[in-house]
Amino acid sequence: MSINFIKHFIVTTILFFFLCGSVSAEVKISSLPKPPPSAKLRVFVVAVSTEFKSVKRPFIWPVSPEEFERRQKLAIGERLKLQGIYEVVNAGDLRAVMGDQTVASWEWIANDWALAKDVGKALHADYVMLSERSLRAHLQFDTKLINLNTGKQFETSGYIPFSRLRIMTNDQRNLAGAEVIKIQFRRIFHDSKSDLIHTVILKGNIAEKEPMAPERVALPPKEKPSQALPVPIANAPKTQAEAVTPQDTLADSKISEKQLAFEKELEKALSAKDKKTDSPRLVVYDFDAADRLKVVGLILTEALREELHNLGGFVLVNRENILKIMDEYKLQQTSLIDEKQAVKIGKWLAANEAVTGKLDILGNTSILQVKRVDIKTLRTMALGSLKCPTGQEDELLGQMAQLAKTLSQSAR
Image (tube, rainbow, N blue to C red; front, side, top):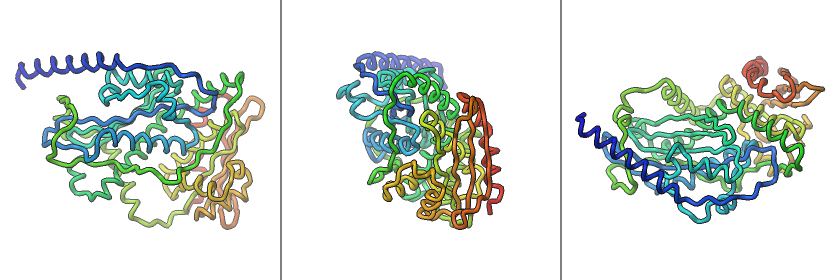
């Protein structure tokens, strides 16, 4: 690589980021009245699509970046709502803060997502979730979650090599795109769950002096939005400004351990779609908890689902299907306090076994009691309990893997 080329690259890069910073400064951000207090974590979602010169040949997405961003934000927003932990910033609040301004992908990304953070703070969000799809020497996906109060960041990334994409059918490519979202959500949640509980507890302490907004059970949309991610088409003209980075030329020559783990998990998810299993079908219900611990209970429930998923031995019923059944039969979340009712719903979900739990406070101690039952016989198959000082429920997360093992002891 010549000295002149390096000098030209450095000058171009400096000018590019100077231009990004100067244009981003023109984006107007208005103030938004503080929304009613809520125990849920308020999240602002930003999705962007960027393209880089490939060292092999040019590619372009079959849909516009704007359409991809719209689909991605919708899919991420629905997935967050379904977990019951989050309150996603709605379009009306975003319009109140930004009006009808159109913001380019590079404007969001410039200066380490400075604009996204500023808008998130103006929206009174607790976190901003950033999703970036980029085209380099491979199909790259990056997800980042930023705590807007502390600045703490959690991120994960992974790519699908073009060598793999070329041998996949369109259906397989779309399925792979949807599975990438799920994998990265699990990774982000795994890394951030302790921070999420800390934020929930802090919000709860502050909100004790303010009336809480009524909580609603998040239900899936009547028509599920498409989560399929478009794949690139070769030898098509470019429509978006490009930047080149020296790292792109080495992207396929060095594969990190995290990337290998990502590909392994993706392969496992894709192959599972075509295989039948004799493993018991298990439904894990949201833990029953008092109002002040409701969201903490949901985070702990999700953490247990995560550990059971990693442990294997079960086919887990996803939360979306649970909520769908509850919606169809006009049931409320409180109905699951009744174990017999929970078992009945499990039958409707074609589940063999169910896990129920309760998070309660006894004096200065928080106690989580969980059990696994056989849906057909109502027999208790395993029991487990955890405890910690009240206000330090994040300590339970470190014991969740052992709890999952305890609950799965008699798994077939």
